[in-house]
Length: 148
Image (cartoon, rainbow, N blue to C red; front, side, top):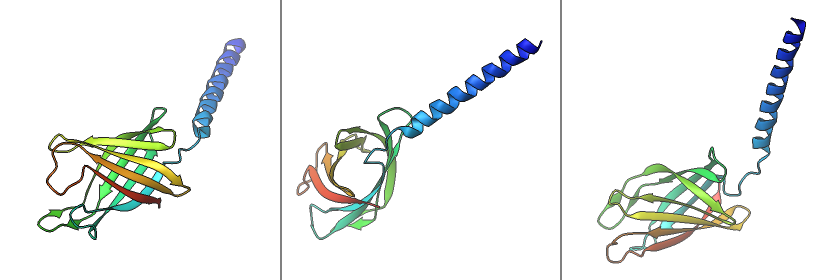
């Protein structure tokens, strides 16, 4: 009886130690440079003086190399239209010094944002828009974002 209790206690101790070690391995995974909150603004292709504030929040996902991204934008008024603030969530991936995420618009066009490391707290952001664009709009936009 005592042997059985000793075996059960030893099995529980090994299980707890293994679970603790696995948890500490995940904590030791180095943090990605891109994790955190990045802020900046896109300039209008119609009127360069008009800027739209943006925020990109990047968090580590469940799987290795998988990241959760929240992209949000502020209110902006162009010549003849208003773009209301909003946000969406998607997934992103890192390859060396670049991070990218993409999404589909309501019209089914694919857009992609790529962040490229420039300095300790600054990245270059490039927006590539898919689909048919109105005249005067360029398919790409670039700006710089800073870590918040």
